[in-house]
Length: 120
Length: 120
DNA sequence: CGAACATACAACTACTTGGTTGTACGTTGT
DNA sequence: ACAACGTACAACCAAGTAGTTGTATGTTCG
Image (cartoon, rainbow over all chains, first blue to last red; front, side):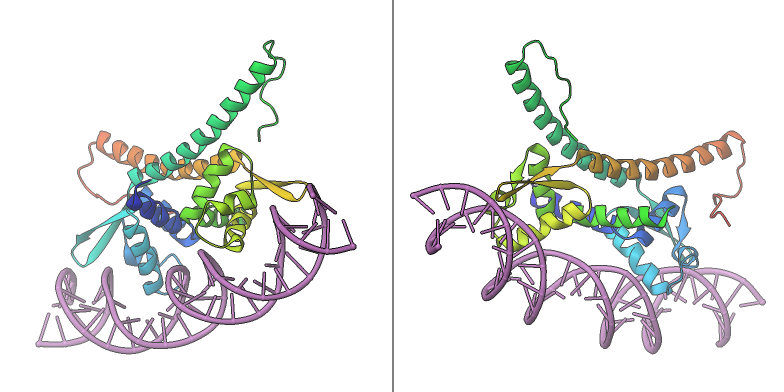
């Protein structure tokens, strides 16, 4: 409902909607990497990778810390979990629908012959 | 790893990256709705909403069934779960990192803060 | 049949995105 | 000091996106 929470969801899902960014995220979740170390892994310019890292950072999926002339990027698992909880909320909405269907069925058929209708 | 599984992830996260589409998804997970019923809920043209529904359908997040002149859209919870499992995979990657750190600590190795940077 | 409804799709516009190159600036090592 | 490195950012471009309006097609109902 909150305006900014929808903004955040937009940013998170958008950040995850690019395969290069998902791959970068995997790497930085596995351990710290400098931006140039990451860039060396992809067949695109350094600047392109740096922009992907910036998108992930703006979405809160990774953080950077300076070490000398390098920026070490590290994945934030809490942000990943927050996305998972958004999906949990969607699943809860679906479960509410199923519960309502089950209620109707049990009212019509108190003997409960049918289990889990064709629900998905 | 599969090429088309990345395509699918692209489509799923992209579909979820728009707040109108997330809202539509919530409604159709809660129960069947015709496209026009959905469209009436938003301050945009019918065609715009119809395109959002098409994006969700292409991503596999909803299915439509014809009933007379209406198309009834219904959310597919399995697709939502498949997204959740992608996030689980990311969290597993992160957990592997933590396990490796724990291993280093338990080996009482005070050197080398860098953790196996890559698979090469 | 003909009117109203429900949907689909094409064409167009404004904006965003993912990529490029070039430049600027701080840090490191010799 | 200075060359090489690591990063950030601006300007640009092609492609995609989210919205619009208009049109076509099928369905229901009086």
